[in-house]
Image 1: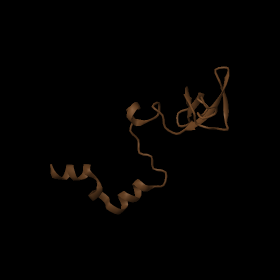
Image 2 (image 1 turned 135 degrees about the vertical axis):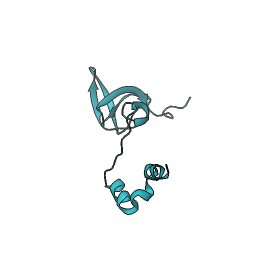
Image 3 (image 1 turned 90 degrees about the vertical axis):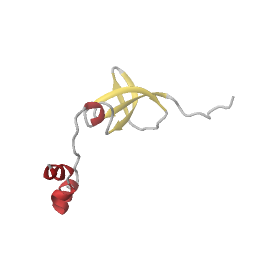
Image 4 (image 1 turned 45 degrees about the vertical axis):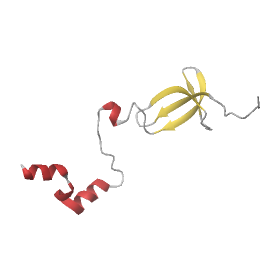
Length: 91
């Protein structure tokens, strides 16, 4: 069998920075950062969304509006762009 044909498959820590949730799993992803988690050093992968913070899994729906896009849309289109406003006016 050829040597060094497969990437290094090892335990890593994924850190969901949006809710400070960490979990250990196995991966081949390369990283330069490490973390001591539960007394052992692991490579660290920082992520913004995981099952712990994703609205589908948490049931908490929120609008992330970092650049004012939602407000800009509402100013431009007003009630015309809102399905709820149109539904309320029909009934």
